[in-house]
Length: 226
Image: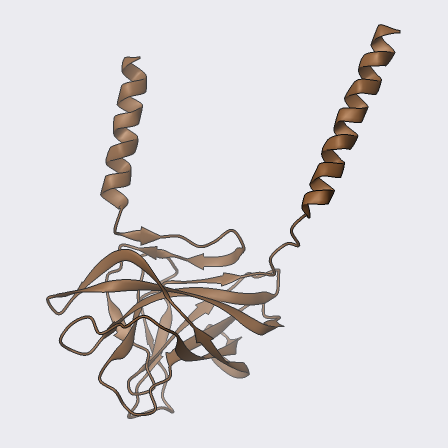
């Protein structure tokens, strides 16, 4: 009994200690650098810089992605609920660097509020989670991506891409003033790549499977009793 109480206490302590510091990839993830103790965040916004990160070792097509960030106008949280537009690009890998552009998606996504917060310039901002499905799949075993929030009017309320302590410490950024130069840095963007979700079984298929199992059990039972 004492051991059980100690285990429960340890579980509560662990959950309390990690709550507010992490968020995980979903069940369809095929590459993950999920949010964990975010050490920094940088703009990835049409009116600011572009953040990029690499991925590798994929054996499945990319059907979507998840990433984490927040909205800030320099004076604190400026997020208002609703959809946002992003331009997401995928690139080939070029010996560890950003290679040729493969495809570009313009997507509209409504982020979910994780309930977690991040302290930026002395202000607490809400951490947002963006779950994106692509209109077509991407076949890349290794490569790079960028996700930039649309901001054609140059609004001061901009998207900041959160970093994570997960990853290989190899990412990049492009500045608005010098879009032709890629700067490589030792940090990790918080993101996951998602594969094609499995086709769910219908209720009828599950019921039929249960009936087959029950039928098999009854037949075995009758055979033993004979």
